[in-house]
Image (cartoon, rainbow, N blue to C red; front, side):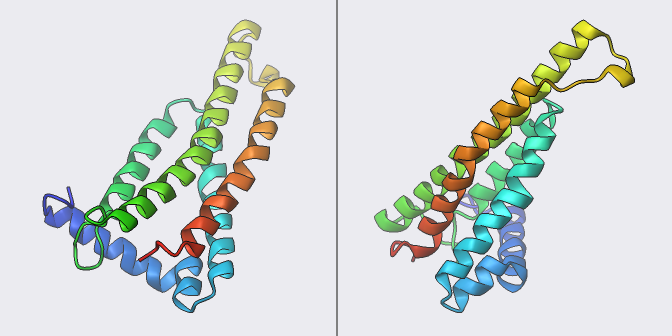
Length: 171
């Protein structure tokens, strides 16, 4: 939409980025040249405000499909800069943009998928046991799998944030 000049998408992008530049700790620290503080803030926001709620929403099985669509749309509308020029027009900015998206996509996918798996396991287990509130159970194996997934998700988010804020390709 932004590459076709949609005024709605461009104005939404401008509001979103403008608000982030004023309130987001990662953006504020990056503007001040505090790259490590920016990376830590981005890492914690992605993990605590992004992945964990998405994982919990995954228990519903359906909700993540909508939230991921919104995330994809936001990822698309920030593919233009403040001048509404494509970040994909030049090699380095395009590679940087796609690498950041990929590095964040992987841990988000793992976290959301683990939540959906827990939701499916919860549904299947309780379908067999009967839908009595006092008998609702989440299987320990499913929760253990979720914990194992987060052993990968946490460092992957940290790597993604470090790349985003330390890369010399961030032009």
